[in-house]
Image 1 (cartoon, rainbow, N blue to C red):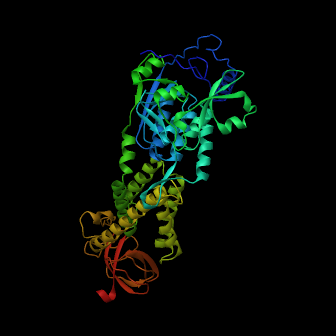
Image 2 (image 1 turned 180 degrees about the vertical axis):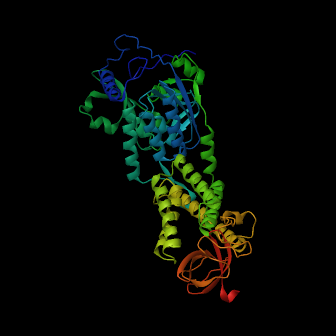
Image 3 (image 1 turned 120 degrees about the vertical axis):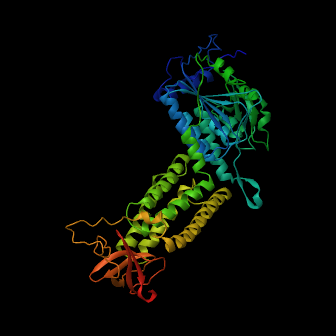
Length: 515
């Protein structure tokens, strides 16, 4: 099946126009069309565009921040491939409004290549908004486009239409999007406004035909110059505009019909094969790490490893594991579209506050509480694409995030009790602490002497707890203050204690009344 090329938005060339001239070209061609000076009207065959390198990106499933970031990465791959034709194959029932507009803006900003939204089956709701950001839309004859009415999950788990204020803003944004890509704004607005009726109209002087609403006709400079031909059936009252591929071409929303990638290739006269950009290992890892069960596992492992590190300070296995777990958590949220540098800064600040509380200003005070709150805030914000929930969906996301954090905290408490009791006795865990160097001649140490830490602490030394030991803290041994841990019990400040174990920098104490 041979298809004629659509009227070009830019002159035929090996490379498309740059960003400065592309908008100017659209404006000039728009005015020429308005005056009836299209190539067809003056008897000139439109020049066929010749593309040399075509890239195809498939976007499938609900529109979400993760899908938005996926498209951003793949468009960068298309730039690296030096493609002059980028096709985004969309098969989606829709999704989040902001992510949909962000995807549309990414396609608009792809100045290096001609962008096409190919719809073989469906691009509904938010997916239709994303498709409107492309230079052209090509659809299968029976594919569906439109029905972008904004809804939310209301009381009783029933979907409801958003308030009029939000619909008005959405209508303005989708009109601007349609105008920027040369499509009838009234038809785009009818996708989000079920009460908007659109008519096919003709200019009495120029003979130009387009699609306008009654309000647009009245708002024009000379309303009497526009003649209503017939209403657009799909925009009747009480219905969000939704059309198939054949009807989309008639309504100037789509440029052509193509049943598959082969026909699409013939339509654009692409000399070589499509460069199909597939999901890679990074995309798979991001998806897996964002699963709730994997997220919970990362948090539990990271928190337990962090607890071990704080119990036996020093860059040891616990610190490395905690760093890896939280690095994977924030990395997956970065590429998943829900986290930014703010969350990382908050998390790092929380760790600093906790370190100050544990090692500089012992006691459970402002620094410790602030550190815990900062860490909690960073983990919550990194798991969602909003700050304050306003819809049922957002409240559901926040509830799920808090549930993950609460269960992770409970797992940490259980693990902490078990590890505190057996830390230093389990063969694997007791290697987390540094071992003292062997005694050598000239050091004045004999094999029979009690082991001594680098701080000069020996087994049997007695002192007083200078801070709350939970189980880590500080004790005063004579005139020195030493970081210690207990066997797992909490010890109040001022309690007499005795050193019962010395392993490198790790000093274990026990209350005197418990010996």
